[in-house]
Length: 277
Ligand code: KIV
Ligand code: NA
Image (tube, rainbow, N blue to C red; front, top):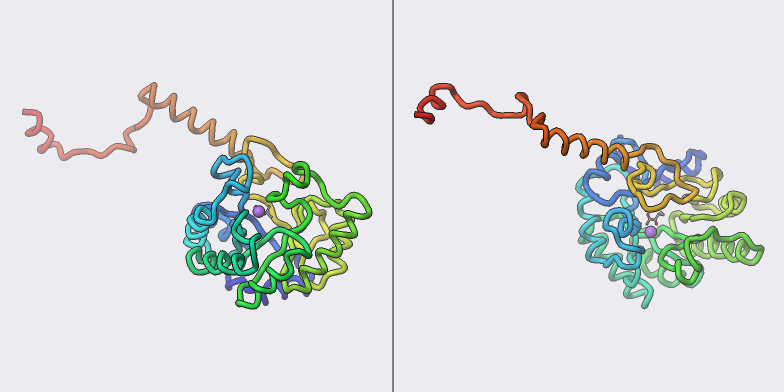
């Protein structure tokens, strides 16, 4: 299968083929994403919560993000590789954002970056794209701003909020975003924004009419045990499966049922006889 490029995503969009995307945060999660044939991998800062146990995404440093990006890049080559700009690594100035984006490309082996925010991010997006680094937008529920949003809540339900999100989406498109993530908005608003834009929308809790979908891999695999948002479909129950497997291992070891004959190395009989004299 051939490498997914921006043009490749554009072709999917033009032919009305849904764009498939998933997060990855390490080597094995990148390997399975590529094997499953996703078009785009996001090294999302959600890894702070689902893979590192932080209480929110804002605890994650750019250096920690870079460490995970390198592991993901070793595991997957074909999908477009996008990384989140971490909280604090891009808000101070467009220059700071460009510097952090360059690190994600040079040190993290990523191909594009994602940042949260609406029209206020336009100068930043222009700065990054002018340097040749593609930018994925992200509006609606923006977890880095969850305190200002009073928690992880659906966005764009009032007329004012919905209109603001439509204007933000258009501003991000004009600034040069190659696509825009819409998180946790009513499905009708997801459809309206998707219809108004000429770049793909990537929905997560934004309904079936977005140009593509994304989920957090450990959420959809049922590995994250803390909570599950409404928009997550659990395609596996890995938390339960993995706990059961480890419990079986623990009881096998205690019962001396593991290791069995097929798991042990045998010594040459003559050498063993000499060893025992
Ligand atoms: O961090 C993340 O995983 C994300 C996606 C949910 C869009 O930003
Ligand atoms: Na994120």
